[in-house]
Length: 476
Picture 1 (cartoon, one colour):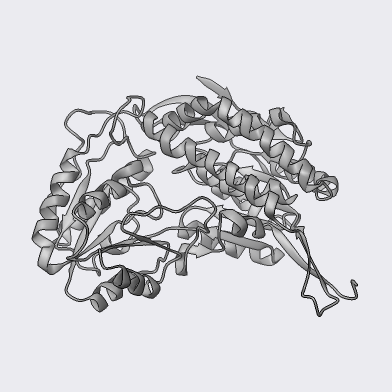
Picture 2 (cartoon, rainbow, N blue to C red; picture 1 turned 30 degrees about the vertical axis):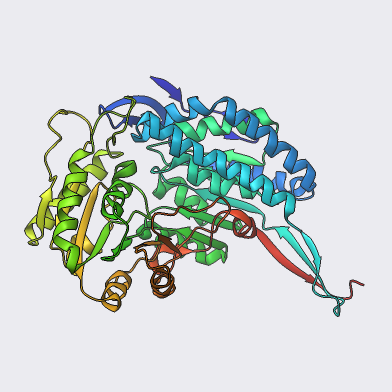
């Protein structure tokens, strides 16, 4: 059993102010493998105080100094890459190969890109050649960073690295059910030699440390990734201190498969949804299929889902692992049962455990056909390996169904008609639109419309989230 009770505050690993042990469960076997502490208000206040004091000097640090420290951190990250992957595999159930190729690799990619963006970023500029006004970009201050369990390092990387790059100080509250990889990253930051107090980590739950952070008068900004429900609560709690609130929330992506889509469009869509056991905010969990190819698409989707293996996270190879916790497992199973009761056709999968497994939070890849967009399974973010297939007749109907959701994070289009793809993409109300399986390039902005959040993470946009803009007249 790993003992990870301490917090990282003011450059040291310190004991919590009061005992509040919490067991971290391995979702592959339902057994505890680590103990952490859930922090109290005293711990939160101590971390914020350290960050506030450190900000006085850190905000004056040079760009070159911050680049140098981030480059040191990158070297350490690469050295401990496999250790970081193993931690994520154990704490949230990512198969070890996926933990390396996707989960841990994404953090390295973000760090590499933010270093490039920082090198090219201009913190001082003249408004224009005719003006005597000067524009200065300055760090916003102490930042509260609250991150989710589904992509533990990826989401931390999108917050910590730009905050460090812009001269902000911070307190991180990682997910209490997946805290080990964040704590390992804290060790790396310490080894890189960042000044004490610049980065602080306090474990805790949302109602405790999360609430304390979002309402704290000395925190200038909150960056949160997680559920829409929690995002609303954070926004309300932050209102009294009028701090900046940046949110990346839930999604219910539509994947429009036109009749002229490329041959493997349906199968690729299934693999996309099922990767990470369906635990990705921008997963294309509603597949909209043109009626002329609908029956074929359902057969292909069912066949592809049946090819996907489910197994423990520690095993190598191509398979999906468990979902992260008993709470999530029960929620997903309940929604699968609701889908059956609503009259959707269960093409494959369902609420029973996979045949080869009798322990762990494992769910079969599940496909529902003949779904209508007013069903609960089409409206709610299930956040598991579950796909709804919905038929459509016209381009306009496909757009209307896709946009008929409270979410607006990622949508998808499959067609070999490039002009149609561009035309439809412009009409979809989401922060991301993926055409024919093309992925995001490093440094492109990531975020959502509507109840999928506000603000953008990644690249130059990610740096700007942590900056205030100051106009100075009479500069010349």
